[in-house]
Image 1: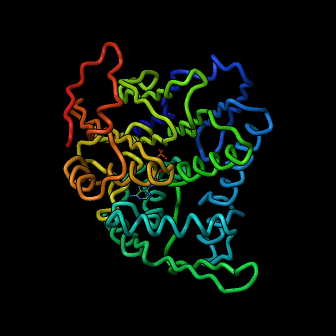
Image 2: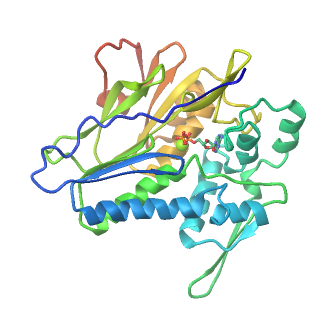
Image 3: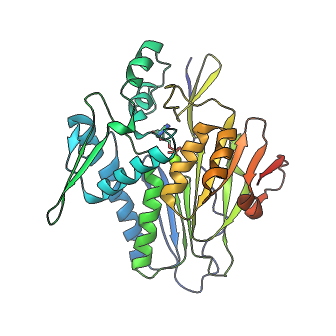
Length: 339
Ligand code: ADP
Ligand code: MG
């Protein structure tokens, strides 16, 4: 019997604007297939504008919706997208190239085939995996902008292709949300976009925000927390969405090279960086890479920190992450620092 378990990410926000002498405004809503909670140290209008911007993005970016830019692109194989969609497509293609194909927005047909879109989970036959893999390549996405005012934007994909921006949309949304706050002069808040958390500024008390990282074995708890200020903390975990069949667990992150759900001993990867887009793209890609490749990649490129939990309940933290991380009471996971 198929067992299905879907857990929502549980990055806990350890503290809010409680000390705020100023106003606090909250919005809690369902969007991008997850729950979001926005808490800003500012007015209701700003919180509402943040929510509206994230909902607008969902309306543009959903891969399965009929009338979104990406939905239309997937059906018709070409679209003249909104400039925001175009911007994210450009950034995403750049990230796919930079991340050596571990991140690939065109892996979507395999995500669908394994049942992660329709929640009709199943293990596909090797023949269909092989067939679908033939059309997986972000290089098959073509973008062009014709000079005019405003420019005419165009996106096109191969005949058998479909793309999905699920690995980067929440991080991008976090960046857009921060811009909305900035435009309103709001400098403090914490935005939890379904496990991708933007820590904006500092708490009104002047201390950094603390962001908890979910315990995969018990998603109501967190095994530790990081301090963050003006950073986005994104986590990709095999526990977030998966199913089990014949005693094996299949998670929702697919290795674009094999077409199979990642099964490399990584349980979760949390990335901390200044950019939401970067944190989200990297959390997915490092998860696919696995610990040793993730370490190599970090040493080569830098510009971010990560916390990786493996299936022996050991933690691997880059130096900068280790400085800002604390295990929660009751957890004794061994910690390895990567320098
Ligand atoms: P979550 O959405 O749970 O926070 P991620 O940011 O890691 O997690 O994104 C995972 C989503 O990205 C999957 O649900 C799937 O739609 C898509 N995806 C899965 N594997 C890949 C991959 N290798 N490259 C790009 N997108 C992927
Ligand atoms: Mg991601």
